[in-house]
Length: 167
Image (cartoon, rainbow, N blue to C red; front, side, top):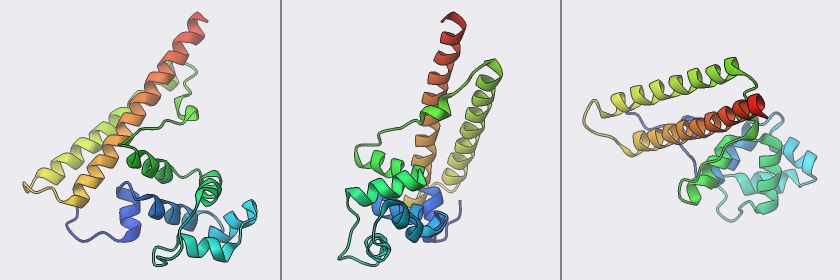
């Protein structure tokens, strides 16, 4: 891992962000940005932009804003941020657990093995110098969270394939 100070965009890809930054990045990367989300949900685009800005300490998003941004973007960083707020709770999308047959189940297992290998590489790289800084710990936490989510998805999918055979 790089020892340089991560940019906001780099941090958004590698760490579980605080909720306000997760909302900001999700809305910013959504096609059409904040204006598109505001238009779909009937919100004032300027107000929403101010609420999401990390440099506007006097404004903050409310539950309606959260619902609009999450509904429009379906951004996993928002769900990760909420999970982190309640003690590293995990979430799994039901559509990620669909395995209709043995072949799709095997693909899920292969994907899980790839994620595990990437995490182990990341741990080796982070600990190679004997120092694990805050950014490296945050990245490892995020990788571990996503690995556990993949295991849960695999468990649900395996159960569904088994039910389909016996059901």
